[in-house]
Amino acid sequence: MAKVLAVASMGGHWEQLQIVAESFKDQNAVFVTTRQDLLQQANRQGFVVKDCNRNRLGDTLSCIWQCIRIIAKVRPSVVISTGAAPGLICLALGRLTGARTIWIDSFANVEQLSMSGKMAGYFAHEWLTQWEHLASPKGPFYRGELL
Image (cartoon, rainbow, N blue to C red; front, side, top):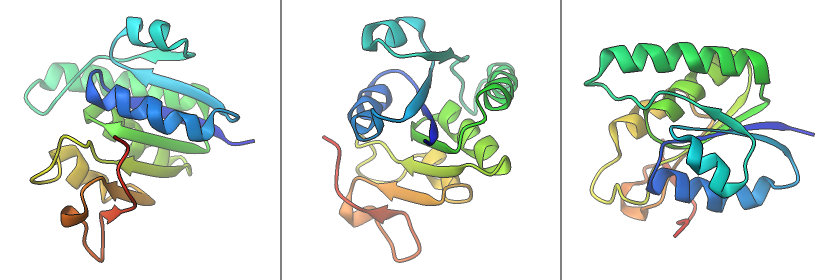
């Protein structure tokens, strides 16, 4: 059975991850998010990491360290994320440890991919957008939308 690490920041990222989570509900899944109450409300097992972005270097370094520890502890065979920065960090670390990686860019990114979504193309085995007009032959790919 695959060990899935499912990662998303709060808000729409988390909501979309919960939709995706239905597809691996029979797997051994561990969730990572940026607020404890999200795990509790969704009745999910997991970890909380520091919310971060490119403008908050200290928070980003803290999040990277937390994600390293989580990847080392969980040893996932699959890492999936709907964004944002903590998801990208886990995706990159998961890829380095041999996990299959899946990135689904947020439905909110209608005009262009998010910065994390663009960077995910370097790490994701499966790189997806939820908008057909943002897809390209080399990725990201369009397979439908979650919402």
